[in-house]
Image (cartoon, each protein chain N blue to C red):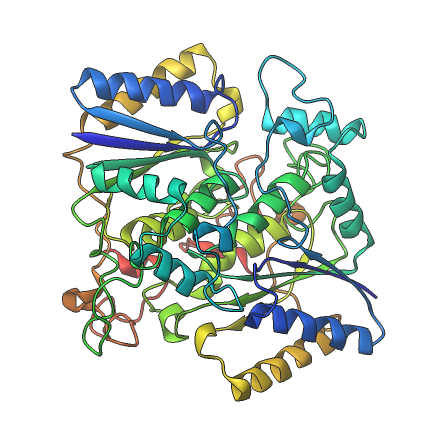
Length: 258
Length: 258
């Protein structure tokens, strides 16, 4: 199978760099073909702007959505964007690998999402009507593919626990797992997480890579997180609220898991 | 009072640009002094790397935390970083203004947080012991200052409601409001939010600016979000989990509000 790793750490000789190298070797040894988008090494342009279209802004005002749509439709996107979209089309599974900085992905990876996720590619796809609000949240361009986060944090496990001060890690990652990955159609696997990254010694690295190896060996069998599909009947459309009879009286991120 | 607006939109003639201009005028008319960090206009460097220290990496490997600490302590930070820290020290209130892109802030603003929030400035501050886990979450360098998000979204209000498919907006913003603003000490005000940003016409803009005006007029009186202070007795230290007798049996972001 084809696996794309989108990797965002500035130092190759870091824990993240070592885990990335381990992942590439493990996947290749299992017969997969691997591509790595090493965003720092590629000097990825993090900032979305009018230069993302070869034609610049269409009108007197740059419109991030509409100019993205036009460039995508007309094959006039900046080449670095089109190349990453091709990698996503090619991939059967995508791994986003990064250190959790300020409770989200590093800016360089956020900018990869913003620029590569063009209007017509990752959003604004499919019919928008009173019964079908676009092909998204379980449908879309990337449907049928798997995605997984590979994340390191500097905190303790308990700090990200159900009652930990940082918030439960699943909730902290929800805007990424649900909003960035499930949205354009990916089946999202449970994340692979290493806490207290600055304290990982040689023995810790052996344990971490063993655990990562198991996750990579089962990349195409692991059950995805059971996010509810937007157009599968669980939501009122166009309000896009969960139907009354489903998880009655409850609210929050958790209700979007079946 | 001194107000800093950190503004992240690529197009001055956008809804965000117009609201920013309105905010500056309104605050100045009320007698406040305003500075704007217009990140796109400043061509803000979004990507954290070894060049953020004038000395580069100290050792053979760039360490994002330790090299930040060293540069901060020795006055060897990149000048653009030091300048933004000075603005934060100067400000009595800080507004982060941005369109919500993929359920978080634009990459250019995320990169402002990552680079300006140096080790020793926004984290790694204060004693770390078994009874006091650093000056953070309600204490820290920016304690005594107020902060507020000014956010536009393309979605409907209901899509971000308690049972909306995007997740409740308060939860989507928690990693920013709690993790980026409350963490280094800010008192965080409820956000100012405009939904369906692409549909705001002249009448909609009048309504939006009237509502924004009221929020700005009461910027220094509005009650902050009652996030629990880390070192105020509500948390076990060093596990940093909420004490058993507080919000018993509950979990999730909501338990961190008193």
